[in-house]
Length: 293
Image (cartoon, rainbow, N blue to C red; front, side):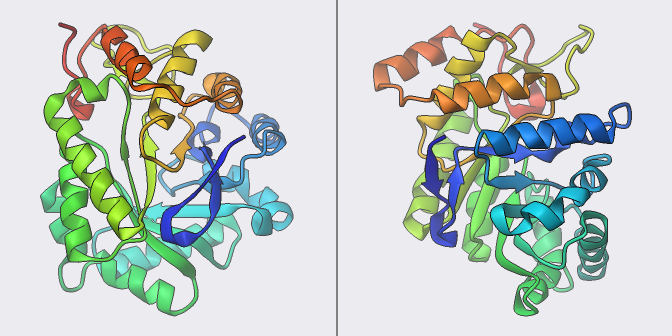
């Protein structure tokens, strides 16, 4: 699988990161998690993404840490916004995951200016992350976020603090939103100027669920067929990004890995064709995905 340098971190991350949320569901078990982790390792994945809010993901991944910790780039997160709460969250992550340090630790889910203000205010969570780095608990600091304002918010975040990585939604369906695309492209440009690592989520997001029954455990409606997944992932990877976490659906993981191993950059004409082919069954305001034209 292709690898790309994750900005100033210098880590050569596989273009798909293992999104550990896929092994965190209560109805799953350790055996299923083990099979998934073994699968991603066999495909050469060398970058794991995890958070305390991902159900039982940390407990499922923890038994693997003694064997693979020095072979993977480990990124974790906290949703806490005050210094003391974030410090407690960091300690919880270490305990649950059975590690004493991370490669990357991130503010999680900052998609509005209000959330950014809380995290970066005096006594905010950013102080805990800086302390963690000073104490050797992580090498790099980052920020993640969802929502239609995420690119704009992360651009402001880079003005306030020199984050090493960013993580925000990028999919062909989302880029049908002209405002979002404009803000995302501005964020791409600034991140590359600063040599910031770019991680992008929601690779398979095609729309919202509306009133339809959900057949995959993700809050957006994903592409499912291999051909659609190929197009969605290849389009995303043809943008100026470095790596993208796999989705929360364990059933789609083999198809994602298959598409990633066969990735080829799309030409501008091919990229436009993928954009034009997007026809969301339902809009998803939470990601800024508009209704089909």
